[in-house]
Length: 403
Ligand code: FAD
Image 1 (tube, rainbow, N blue to C red):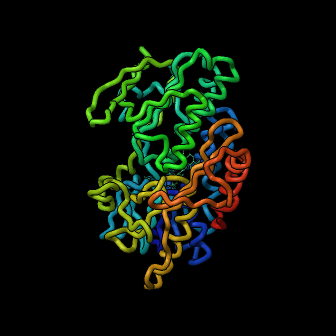
Image 2: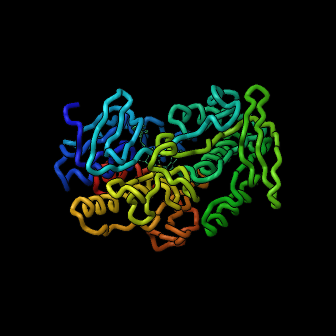
Image 3: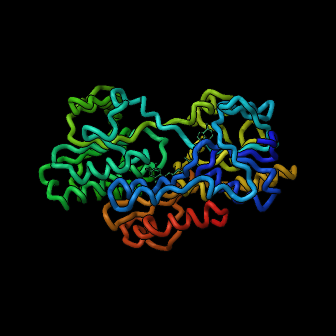
């Protein structure tokens, strides 16, 4: 690493980091931009739901990072261990540091597997699976396809999580697989969610109520998975009743699809950039419209790490990227910020093989449909959008700064 100071430093080369780098490289000299990320692979995570059900091969979801970092932009393949906004520098795991004029934090979030007692070392075995890790996707597909009947539980932790629809999308695909394999009649399928409803936006929640009813899936609301006994095949849930009284429910399972609780990365939670109180406590403290840090005006945030009341998705990142770039350029020019993010997020809710409800919404649950059709209906066209069109747009347009 020859240069130790950059006009623009981006932390994280996931969906958000690459999108911002790709857009900024034509606005300022690319050699003034550096992006820090230790990972030599980049994942299009939305495909893990389909791969976990055996619809596509998981390898379709990844590319090498070196082929995605925009030309001219310097990639520092290291882990960030500390951010010091007063000195305008970040420290790396190898003991070096890098300075910046402007910083974009795009570190994603952390899967807090350790919050589920007894799970460590048992994912991918004893009927316990998850689509939330690339290397667990194949064992998930195998377990769903080899399921012989019994109780299959699909869990959903408290929000915020990335893609709040994915925990139930995989369940609907699983339900179809069980039916195809003739084991559904001797099975109970449970959706055990920490939430009180199927989905945070009422019209889509209502549509999903119909889907679970049609599929005879038994819902268990306000059930938060806290522990697993892999040998006994039992799952412990913390249950909150209507009066707020908390109790424990121990359930035997034959198949358990686990979605872990999620937090901001530890360096954000413990560092000076997180919100110290309120609903977004622990997440990167940014203005929900400008995405500028609430204290340090030379810092912006994008993606899952940001503490904004939206739904954490790649679709949200797509709408945030042009706003961050606009505001970065304004800030660099000393002008008032002109970009504003409206909270847009989208979740293609897979409700079975060949069926998707395309949920699109912004801040305060405002519906933001892209197409002039009834968005609450299950559609084959949206299945193709999710499976075929969106991945292509991601690799070829969004990561190139064209979408
Ligand atoms: P990421 O893309 O996760 O990137 C974060 C980057 O930061 C990574 O490259 C990581 O290596 C890097 N990093 C982390 N720590 C450090 C460090 N200390 N130093 C340097 N670099 C670091 N979204 C949708 O829009 N639609 C969907 O249907 C959908 N389905 C999903 C299904 C599943 C199963 C999952 C897991 C996700 C899904 N998502 C979906 C969500 C979507 O993938 C994320 O919201 C999106 O990737 C967020 O982008 P990001 O840049 O914030 O984080």
